[in-house]
Image (cartoon, rainbow, N blue to C red; front, side, top):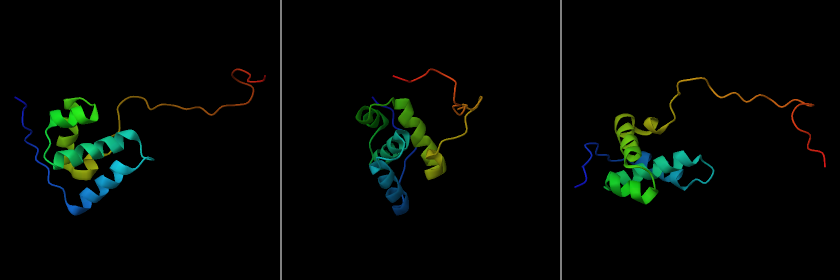
Length: 102
């Protein structure tokens, strides 16, 4: 029997509008669209297992975002700073690397 989450979510009108807009945007990063869809499904009363299957993600992923939204609302869906060294993208300089002449 699936475990029922203790994190019940009821959206305000403004939260629903923001999430629906994010869920429809093709220009947003995929993770933002996916998180919005998860929370909209949670608010409709769907269980974590059902949402995970519908969106092809793990149950633990749905559980994590449900809990973060419950605790922090929309701010909880934002990316947090990650530990470790940040990625470095060095600018390309002329004369380095392989030549692309044909």
